[in-house]
Amino acid sequence: MQPTFKLRNFPFRGPNFGEDINGMMGDLSRDLHDIYNYLTEVLSNQNTNIEVALYEYYATRARTLEMEAQRNWDNLLKARAGETLNFIQDFRKTDNLTWGSGANTIAEANRLRFDQPYGQLILPYNRVKNHFYSLDVSTGQPIQEPNLTVTTQALDEGTPVSVSETDNKNAFNGINASYWKRTVRFAIENDVSQVTCTLQVDVPASLLTKSNVLVLHPYPAGQVDILNIQYSTTTADPSITLPGFPSGGVNNATMLRYHFAPLEITKLKVTLRQRTPVEWDGYRVFSYGLQELGLQLVEFDHTAYSKIGPYQSNAAVFKVHAPEGFTFEQILDFYCDPYYDTGADHTKIYYHIYVDETLTTEVWNSEDFPNPSSTPIGVTSHTPSILYVLAAAGFDSTNNVSPVLEKFALRATVE
Image (cartoon, rainbow, N blue to C red):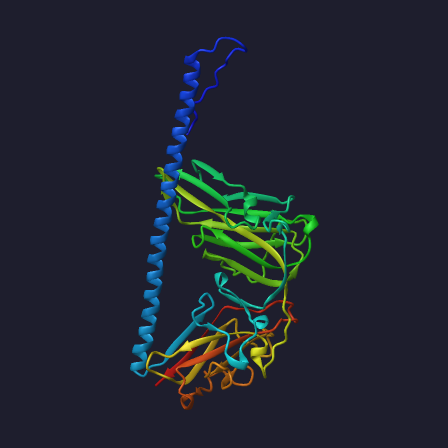
């Protein structure tokens, strides 16, 4: 949209011609009218996009509920047939989360930090220092560190018609409403299947303190592959893979967070790939980037784990429901990721299973009992329709990291 208004020159104390005045006012009127129509169209498109997003959300939610219902019905049918049932608890879901009850309720200060977007249970935070931004004490708004050096490099983007990107520093400002986006346009007949690039940031010398947490929010979420996250502790280019990052990368990445022993990171490099093009305005378009890349130093709570009173430790409790009309008979296996502490690996992750919400009748714990896969746990005498699985953790002082709990599963029979 281009303005049509043209400034007319009116002589000082000279004659002013109505034609010029009327023409200038006409230009202003047309521009205002065009602006009004443009804003109306933008608002209409925005409302349409919101409506489409809502419909897609409702459709996705319906499919999720359908899959959950199918799993519940599958367990019900297996129970009716006397078969073994599998129960899986992913820590992206809160519907089975509880904190016990009565005297053994887990106190607010001792509750594991439940971060649903990352699917993680971790120790509570005491303090957090962000290396790329700080919060304004008067407004509470993020303020980006002024001396960031950020570079983008195309690795495999073929021969596009055009490449554009927003400010790559947007990935480091702590503001979720802004992001770095790289848009690569090809002719519609081009058969290119993917594009890749890297984003590198140098940590300002004034901020060179140790870090132990990295968070990454890709854009668009679920459509970008993170092929590698590398770092350097010197002036050399990043070449060391971040601890905990999988060797095969993360395809269709959503929000990611990695915990590691404190490192004095000087440079970070992320390699991204987009394999999902769209047809837009007559072009084959790939868009990818980051909403946020954060580097933090987190001080975790160091409350010691207590086997005698695990509900006094940093813990959380999850309910496992038998199919309606059935009670648990035997627990045949228990598995978790990461695996619970066996004494040799120092994961500092512990599990207890109770048959009551008050957490008084324990039937198994990961320290004193072998895995139920070798010695099944009979619970028939308690006739429980719900099992209460307590997950507890303590700070891993051997490796100087916080444990990260992501999921557990158990196999059982019902009657």
